[in-house]
Image (cartoon, rainbow, N blue to C red; front, side):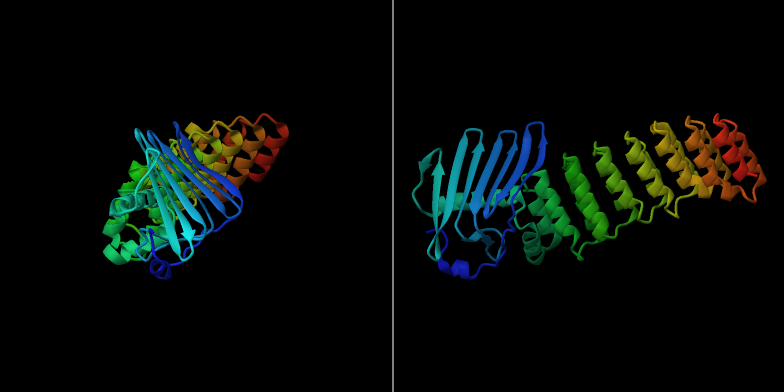
Length: 375
Protein backbone atom coordinates (compact mmCIF):
# COMPACT_ATOMS: atom_id res chain seq x y z
CA UNK A 1 0.00 0.00 0.00
CA UNK A 2 1.22 3.49 -0.76
CA UNK A 3 -0.81 5.69 1.60
CA UNK A 4 -2.86 4.42 4.52
CA UNK A 5 -6.30 5.59 5.59
CA UNK A 6 -4.73 7.75 8.32
CA UNK A 7 -3.05 9.82 5.66
CA UNK A 8 -6.36 10.26 3.90
CA UNK A 9 -7.95 11.50 7.11
CA UNK A 10 -5.14 14.02 7.55
CA UNK A 11 -5.49 15.32 4.03
CA UNK A 12 -6.41 18.88 3.16
CA UNK A 13 -9.21 18.81 0.61
CA UNK A 14 -8.43 20.51 -2.69
CA UNK A 15 -10.75 19.38 -5.44
CA UNK A 16 -10.23 19.87 -9.13
CA UNK A 17 -12.95 22.02 -10.69
CA UNK A 18 -14.30 20.14 -13.67
CA UNK A 19 -16.03 21.26 -16.83
CA UNK A 20 -15.50 20.10 -20.37
CA UNK A 21 -12.65 22.03 -21.97
CA UNK A 22 -9.37 21.57 -23.73
CA UNK A 23 -6.65 24.11 -23.18
CA UNK A 24 -3.45 24.27 -25.20
CA UNK A 25 -1.49 26.39 -22.78
CA UNK A 26 1.61 26.86 -24.87
CA UNK A 27 3.15 25.40 -27.98
CA UNK A 28 6.48 26.77 -29.18
CA UNK A 29 9.45 25.17 -30.93
CA UNK A 30 8.08 21.70 -30.27
CA UNK A 31 7.50 22.37 -26.57
CA UNK A 32 3.94 22.18 -25.32
CA UNK A 33 1.67 22.00 -22.31
CA UNK A 34 -1.90 20.78 -22.57
CA UNK A 35 -4.67 20.25 -20.07
CA UNK A 36 -7.90 18.56 -21.09
CA UNK A 37 -10.97 18.15 -18.89
CA UNK A 38 -13.97 16.00 -19.84
CA UNK A 39 -16.54 15.56 -17.12
CA UNK A 40 -14.68 14.23 -14.08
CA UNK A 41 -11.66 13.08 -16.11
CA UNK A 42 -8.53 15.18 -16.67
CA UNK A 43 -5.41 14.79 -18.75
CA UNK A 44 -2.22 16.82 -18.53
CA UNK A 45 0.86 16.66 -20.73
CA UNK A 46 4.11 18.56 -20.96
CA UNK A 47 6.84 18.22 -23.55
CA UNK A 48 10.08 20.19 -23.34
CA UNK A 49 12.97 18.87 -25.38
CA UNK A 50 13.63 15.26 -24.37
CA UNK A 51 11.32 15.52 -21.37
CA UNK A 52 7.73 14.32 -21.68
CA UNK A 53 5.33 14.08 -18.75
CA UNK A 54 1.78 12.81 -19.00
CA UNK A 55 -0.84 12.50 -16.28
CA UNK A 56 -4.46 11.48 -16.32
CA UNK A 57 -6.89 11.11 -13.47
CA UNK A 58 -10.55 10.69 -12.70
CA UNK A 59 -12.32 12.27 -9.76
CA UNK A 60 -10.85 14.50 -7.09
CA UNK A 61 -7.22 14.58 -6.01
CA UNK A 62 -6.20 15.77 -2.56
CA UNK A 63 -2.75 16.73 -1.35
CA UNK A 64 -1.48 15.97 2.13
CA UNK A 65 -0.77 18.64 4.74
CA UNK A 66 2.70 19.30 3.36
CA UNK A 67 1.42 19.87 -0.16
CA UNK A 68 4.12 17.51 -1.43
CA UNK A 69 2.22 14.23 -1.80
CA UNK A 70 -1.10 12.80 -2.92
CA UNK A 71 -3.16 11.82 0.10
CA UNK A 72 -6.39 10.87 -1.66
CA UNK A 73 -7.62 9.89 -5.10
CA UNK A 74 -11.32 9.57 -5.71
CA UNK A 75 -10.70 7.04 -8.48
CA UNK A 76 -7.18 6.94 -9.92
CA UNK A 77 -4.13 8.98 -10.94
CA UNK A 78 -1.61 7.80 -13.51
CA UNK A 79 1.64 9.59 -14.33
CA UNK A 80 4.14 8.75 -17.07
CA UNK A 81 7.66 10.09 -17.58
CA UNK A 82 9.71 9.72 -20.75
CA UNK A 83 13.11 11.39 -20.55
CA UNK A 84 15.65 10.22 -23.06
CA UNK A 85 16.25 6.56 -22.25
CA UNK A 86 14.34 6.64 -18.95
CA UNK A 87 10.70 5.56 -18.95
CA UNK A 88 8.65 5.48 -15.78
CA UNK A 89 4.97 5.04 -15.01
CA UNK A 90 2.99 4.98 -11.80
CA UNK A 91 -0.66 4.49 -10.94
CA UNK A 92 -2.45 5.38 -7.72
CA UNK A 93 -5.86 3.79 -7.44
CA UNK A 94 -8.46 3.94 -4.70
CA UNK A 95 -8.70 0.67 -2.78
CA UNK A 96 -11.30 1.06 -0.08
CA UNK A 97 -9.91 3.63 2.35
CA UNK A 98 -6.38 3.11 1.06
CA UNK A 99 -4.51 3.90 -2.14
CA UNK A 100 -3.06 1.06 -4.16
CA UNK A 101 0.21 2.09 -5.81
CA UNK A 102 1.87 0.46 -8.81
CA UNK A 103 5.13 1.53 -10.41
CA UNK A 104 6.74 0.48 -13.69
CA UNK A 105 10.28 1.19 -14.87
CA UNK A 106 11.07 0.65 -18.55
CA UNK A 107 7.86 -1.34 -18.81
CA UNK A 108 8.63 -3.65 -15.89
CA UNK A 109 6.50 -3.56 -12.75
CA UNK A 110 8.64 -2.99 -9.67
CA UNK A 111 8.27 -4.68 -6.31
CA UNK A 112 6.67 -2.59 -3.53
CA UNK A 113 9.07 -1.12 -1.00
CA UNK A 114 10.84 2.00 0.17
CA UNK A 115 12.74 2.44 -3.11
CA UNK A 116 9.57 2.10 -5.19
CA UNK A 117 7.75 4.57 -2.91
CA UNK A 118 10.60 7.05 -3.41
CA UNK A 119 10.28 6.75 -7.19
CA UNK A 120 6.52 7.27 -6.94
CA UNK A 121 6.97 10.32 -4.75
CA UNK A 122 9.47 11.73 -7.25
CA UNK A 123 6.97 11.29 -10.09
CA UNK A 124 4.25 12.99 -8.05
CA UNK A 125 6.54 15.94 -7.35
CA UNK A 126 7.45 16.13 -11.04
CA UNK A 127 3.74 16.26 -11.90
CA UNK A 128 3.05 18.96 -9.28
CA UNK A 129 5.98 21.05 -10.49
CA UNK A 130 5.06 20.71 -14.15
CA UNK A 131 1.31 21.25 -13.88
CA UNK A 132 1.22 23.79 -11.00
CA UNK A 133 -1.53 21.65 -9.48
CA UNK A 134 -2.75 23.41 -6.30
CA UNK A 135 -0.08 26.09 -6.70
CA UNK A 136 -1.88 28.47 -4.33
CA UNK A 137 -2.02 25.87 -1.59
CA UNK A 138 1.59 24.79 -2.06
CA UNK A 139 2.86 28.37 -2.01
CA UNK A 140 0.92 28.98 1.20
CA UNK A 141 2.46 25.92 2.83
CA UNK A 142 5.95 26.92 1.71
CA UNK A 143 5.50 30.43 3.11
CA UNK A 144 4.54 28.99 6.50
CA UNK A 145 7.37 26.46 6.49
CA UNK A 146 10.22 28.60 5.20
CA UNK A 147 9.04 32.02 4.10
CA UNK A 148 9.53 33.62 0.70
CA UNK A 149 12.96 32.01 0.28
CA UNK A 150 11.33 28.57 0.46
CA UNK A 151 8.98 29.56 -2.37
CA UNK A 152 11.93 30.85 -4.39
CA UNK A 153 13.74 27.55 -3.85
CA UNK A 154 10.69 25.64 -5.07
CA UNK A 155 10.33 27.90 -8.10
CA UNK A 156 13.89 27.00 -9.05
CA UNK A 157 12.73 23.37 -9.34
CA UNK A 158 9.64 23.98 -11.43
CA UNK A 159 9.51 22.23 -14.77
CA UNK A 160 7.59 24.65 -16.98
CA UNK A 161 7.14 28.36 -17.66
CA UNK A 162 3.46 27.85 -16.98
CA UNK A 163 4.20 26.56 -13.47
CA UNK A 164 6.60 29.43 -12.73
CA UNK A 165 3.90 31.87 -13.78
CA UNK A 166 1.31 30.22 -11.54
CA UNK A 167 3.62 30.13 -8.51
CA UNK A 168 4.69 33.71 -9.13
CA UNK A 169 1.05 34.80 -9.28
CA UNK A 170 0.28 32.96 -6.04
CA UNK A 171 3.29 34.50 -4.31
CA UNK A 172 2.34 37.93 -5.66
CA UNK A 173 -0.82 37.82 -3.56
CA UNK A 174 1.21 37.44 -0.37
CA UNK A 175 1.42 40.47 1.90
CA UNK A 176 4.78 39.37 3.28
CA UNK A 177 6.99 40.44 0.38
CA UNK A 178 9.55 43.18 0.93
CA UNK A 179 10.63 45.56 -1.83
CA UNK A 180 13.79 43.50 -2.33
CA UNK A 181 11.78 40.29 -2.57
CA UNK A 182 9.45 41.82 -5.14
CA UNK A 183 12.49 42.75 -7.20
CA UNK A 184 13.92 39.24 -6.79
CA UNK A 185 10.60 37.70 -7.89
CA UNK A 186 10.56 39.86 -11.02
CA UNK A 187 14.15 38.85 -11.80
CA UNK A 188 13.14 35.18 -11.68
CA UNK A 189 10.74 35.83 -14.53
CA UNK A 190 13.61 36.82 -16.83
CA UNK A 191 14.21 33.11 -17.50
CA UNK A 192 10.71 32.61 -18.93
CA UNK A 193 10.30 32.28 -22.68
CA UNK A 194 6.54 32.25 -23.26
CA UNK A 195 5.10 35.71 -23.95
CA UNK A 196 1.80 34.96 -22.22
CA UNK A 197 3.52 33.51 -19.17
CA UNK A 198 5.83 36.52 -18.80
CA UNK A 199 2.96 38.99 -19.19
CA UNK A 200 0.62 37.16 -16.82
CA UNK A 201 3.29 36.88 -14.14
CA UNK A 202 4.24 40.56 -14.41
CA UNK A 203 0.60 41.62 -14.36
CA UNK A 204 -0.02 39.63 -11.18
CA UNK A 205 2.87 41.40 -9.48
CA UNK A 206 1.68 44.81 -10.72
CA UNK A 207 -1.83 44.07 -9.48
CA UNK A 208 -0.90 43.01 -5.95
CA UNK A 209 2.46 44.45 -4.97
CA UNK A 210 3.96 47.84 -4.29
CA UNK A 211 7.51 48.21 -5.52
CA UNK A 212 10.20 50.79 -5.75
CA UNK A 213 11.72 52.39 -8.83
CA UNK A 214 14.44 49.77 -9.09
CA UNK A 215 11.84 47.00 -9.20
CA UNK A 216 9.85 48.93 -11.81
CA UNK A 217 12.93 49.21 -14.00
CA UNK A 218 13.53 45.47 -13.55
CA UNK A 219 9.93 44.74 -14.54
CA UNK A 220 10.29 46.82 -17.70
CA UNK A 221 13.57 45.08 -18.50
CA UNK A 222 11.91 41.66 -18.19
CA UNK A 223 9.01 42.86 -20.35
CA UNK A 224 11.51 43.49 -23.14
CA UNK A 225 11.68 39.68 -23.51
CA UNK A 226 8.07 39.69 -24.73
CA UNK A 227 7.73 39.46 -28.51
CA UNK A 228 3.94 39.68 -28.70
CA UNK A 229 2.70 43.23 -29.21
CA UNK A 230 -0.56 42.36 -27.46
CA UNK A 231 1.12 40.98 -24.34
CA UNK A 232 3.59 43.86 -24.26
CA UNK A 233 0.74 46.34 -24.46
CA UNK A 234 -1.04 44.62 -21.56
CA UNK A 235 2.04 45.11 -19.38
CA UNK A 236 2.42 48.73 -20.47
CA UNK A 237 -1.23 49.41 -19.68
CA UNK A 238 -0.67 48.10 -16.14
CA UNK A 239 2.50 50.14 -15.75
CA UNK A 240 0.68 53.27 -16.86
CA UNK A 241 -1.49 53.12 -13.74
CA UNK A 242 1.51 53.15 -11.41
CA UNK A 243 3.70 56.04 -10.20
CA UNK A 244 6.58 56.45 -12.64
CA UNK A 245 9.92 58.11 -12.08
CA UNK A 246 11.66 59.91 -14.94
CA UNK A 247 13.90 56.88 -15.54
CA UNK A 248 10.95 54.48 -15.46
CA UNK A 249 9.00 56.67 -17.87
CA UNK A 250 11.95 56.72 -20.27
CA UNK A 251 12.20 52.91 -20.06
CA UNK A 252 8.45 52.60 -20.60
CA UNK A 253 8.59 54.74 -23.72
CA UNK A 254 11.50 52.67 -24.98
CA UNK A 255 9.47 49.49 -24.49
CA UNK A 256 6.46 51.04 -26.22
CA UNK A 257 8.62 52.00 -29.19
CA UNK A 258 9.36 48.29 -29.84
CA UNK A 259 5.67 47.58 -30.55
CA UNK A 260 4.85 47.20 -34.24
CA UNK A 261 1.06 46.83 -34.16
CA UNK A 262 -0.72 50.13 -34.78
CA UNK A 263 -3.52 49.29 -32.38
CA UNK A 264 -1.27 48.16 -29.56
CA UNK A 265 1.15 51.08 -29.73
CA UNK A 266 -1.79 53.49 -29.95
CA UNK A 267 -3.47 52.06 -26.84
CA UNK A 268 -0.13 52.09 -25.00
CA UNK A 269 0.48 55.71 -25.96
CA UNK A 270 -3.03 56.73 -24.90
CA UNK A 271 -2.59 55.08 -21.51
CA UNK A 272 0.76 56.73 -20.91
CA UNK A 273 -0.46 60.15 -22.03
CA UNK A 274 -3.29 59.89 -19.51
CA UNK A 275 -0.72 59.52 -16.72
CA UNK A 276 -0.66 62.87 -14.91
CA UNK A 277 2.97 62.44 -13.83
CA UNK A 278 4.27 62.19 -17.40
CA UNK A 279 6.23 65.36 -18.16
CA UNK A 280 5.87 67.43 -21.32
CA UNK A 281 9.22 66.13 -22.55
CA UNK A 282 8.13 62.55 -22.07
CA UNK A 283 4.75 63.24 -23.65
CA UNK A 284 6.59 64.59 -26.69
CA UNK A 285 8.65 61.39 -26.81
CA UNK A 286 5.50 59.27 -26.62
CA UNK A 287 3.91 61.15 -29.53
CA UNK A 288 7.13 60.94 -31.56
CA UNK A 289 7.45 57.20 -30.93
CA UNK A 290 3.83 56.65 -31.93
CA UNK A 291 4.26 58.69 -35.12
CA UNK A 292 7.37 56.71 -35.98
CA UNK A 293 5.66 53.32 -35.56
CA UNK A 294 2.03 53.85 -36.56
CA UNK A 295 0.96 53.62 -40.21
CA UNK A 296 -2.78 53.94 -39.65
CA UNK A 297 -4.12 57.51 -39.76
CA UNK A 298 -6.98 56.44 -37.48
CA UNK A 299 -4.67 55.20 -34.72
CA UNK A 300 -2.22 58.10 -35.03
CA UNK A 301 -5.09 60.59 -34.89
CA UNK A 302 -6.30 59.00 -31.65
CA UNK A 303 -2.84 59.49 -30.16
CA UNK A 304 -2.89 63.13 -31.24
CA UNK A 305 -6.33 63.49 -29.67
CA UNK A 306 -5.04 62.04 -26.40
CA UNK A 307 -2.06 64.42 -26.46
CA UNK A 308 -4.09 67.50 -27.43
CA UNK A 309 -4.84 68.66 -23.84
CA UNK A 310 -1.07 69.10 -23.32
CA UNK A 311 -0.50 71.25 -26.42
CA UNK A 312 0.15 74.37 -24.39
CA UNK A 313 3.75 73.22 -23.93
CA UNK A 314 6.03 74.11 -26.84
CA UNK A 315 8.13 70.93 -26.73
CA UNK A 316 5.02 68.79 -27.03
CA UNK A 317 3.50 71.09 -29.64
CA UNK A 318 6.52 70.55 -31.88
CA UNK A 319 6.15 66.76 -31.61
CA UNK A 320 2.39 67.01 -32.08
CA UNK A 321 2.61 69.01 -35.31
CA UNK A 322 5.37 66.74 -36.63
CA UNK A 323 3.09 63.75 -36.03
CA UNK A 324 0.13 65.63 -37.55
CA UNK A 325 2.14 66.06 -40.74
CA UNK A 326 2.24 62.26 -41.05
CA UNK A 327 -1.54 62.15 -41.46
CA UNK A 328 -2.90 61.81 -44.99
CA UNK A 329 -6.65 61.45 -44.40
CA UNK A 330 -8.67 64.66 -44.45
CA UNK A 331 -11.14 63.38 -41.87
CA UNK A 332 -8.44 62.41 -39.37
CA UNK A 333 -6.63 65.73 -39.84
CA UNK A 334 -9.84 67.64 -39.22
CA UNK A 335 -10.80 65.65 -36.11
CA UNK A 336 -7.28 66.02 -34.66
CA UNK A 337 -7.48 69.80 -35.13
CA UNK A 338 -10.95 69.91 -33.56
CA UNK A 339 -9.57 68.11 -30.49
CA UNK A 340 -6.76 70.67 -30.22
CA UNK A 341 -8.96 73.75 -30.75
CA UNK A 342 -10.15 74.18 -27.12
CA UNK A 343 -6.54 74.29 -25.90
CA UNK A 344 -5.81 77.12 -28.37
CA UNK A 345 -8.82 79.24 -27.37
CA UNK A 346 -6.63 81.74 -25.50
CA UNK A 347 -3.34 80.92 -27.20
CA UNK A 348 -3.10 82.84 -30.47
CA UNK A 349 0.33 81.50 -31.51
CA UNK A 350 -0.93 77.92 -31.07
CA UNK A 351 -4.17 78.74 -32.88
CA UNK A 352 -2.15 80.16 -35.78
CA UNK A 353 -0.14 76.94 -36.04
CA UNK A 354 -3.36 74.91 -36.03
CA UNK A 355 -4.87 77.06 -38.77
CA UNK A 356 -1.71 76.67 -40.79
CA UNK A 357 -1.93 72.90 -40.31
CA UNK A 358 -5.54 72.97 -41.53
CA UNK A 359 -4.27 74.16 -44.91
CA UNK A 360 -3.03 70.61 -45.50
CA UNK A 361 -6.61 69.35 -45.68
CA UNK A 362 -7.60 68.91 -49.32
CA UNK A 363 -11.31 68.33 -48.70
CA UNK A 364 -13.05 71.71 -48.76
CA UNK A 365 -15.72 70.44 -46.37
CA UNK A 366 -13.27 69.17 -43.73
CA UNK A 367 -10.96 72.16 -44.11
CA UNK A 368 -13.87 74.59 -43.71
CA UNK A 369 -15.11 72.79 -40.56
CA UNK A 370 -11.62 72.83 -39.03
CA UNK A 371 -11.11 76.53 -39.76
CA UNK A 372 -14.54 77.38 -38.41
CA UNK A 373 -13.75 75.90 -35.02
CA UNK A 374 -10.35 77.62 -35.02
CA UNK A 375 -11.72 81.16 -35.49
